[in-house]
Image (tube, one colour):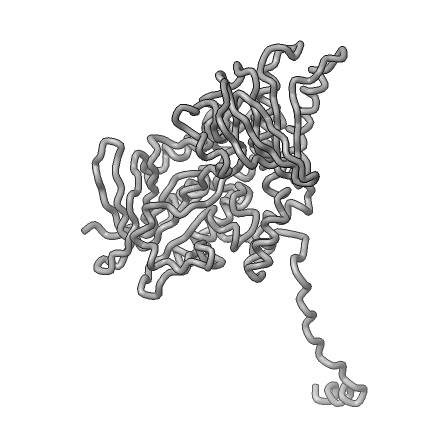
Length: 459
């Protein structure tokens, strides 16, 4: 048997790609990263022209942990002869399409990254003293690899509200869909008479804005656009400088030591930190509506916050959505030709982990129990190490899905796996003191005058 890898990653999204980039060239670190896709792709359904990352370009794969890495975004620009155009564009937030291309550039050049490799099982092989990973290609070829440590970076799955699940896929494909598939059906939706977007986050706002821009200058062509959201307002994402300190290692360390009930409550209450909409996008939507109503024209759009969909059914030529206004307690019906569900994503237990499931120490709600190094608690009989990326919001806070902490988290995992500080991480990154301040160190009592004279005499 070939010697086990030191580390194997399952899934090659930005977070595991960050870890692969930081692992590259580390002496004594043999790593393998596997992904079922034929090549790297990042939210392809939302790579619409004009959309940008919600974090600055410095939150690339490596810079926040190792700005000297050859896999930085700035080096990508240099290699593509785009440094001067980027400099003159004065961009702090880069196009999503370029971020996707940058990640693909890195993934194609890292020898540890292997695509067309769908992991079907991860189990503990006691004889080998390592995890055994079984994976197969699209052509059906099955392979097996061993690794002492496994890092799960499989991403999150689209969330679909219960009332709309029966209408997803099949005969309704392209007319009822999650925003993850928006780009593939964009042209058909732009030609539909009426489109309802459900969900108040950034994805929902971007779909609404794109559909509004498909209306002609007189507001006659293009679809009627309706936006429904459970949140009490179409609220901007928290973007103040001190507010953003919730996306620092300092807040992660504070959050981890809170009681579980407090952590769960905070994640719900802090929705504007990770579910809000950029102020610029909200402004663009307002501007589009303003343009459409010049001269007294009626807007071909409706915005309804504080509304949840409680039932849905197919009607002739479209769909009927039963809606409830959460504050008024009233019910009303919406008729629409198509529905786009911008209802977010959530972590899910991957099927390939089932052979290992009984050896994972799940919490009472079936979630991973994760320590400060992002290591999952396992049965003591398993000496191997299992880590997770972006499946630990319940233990590490709202920064889990955010690209800002991606390189820092990857460096933390790499250092834990290597048993040494391969990539130094900051001891402090925020001005804010989360939690009660530490008690001051006890001061030594002052010497009396007699004691001071005696000490001077002793010298």
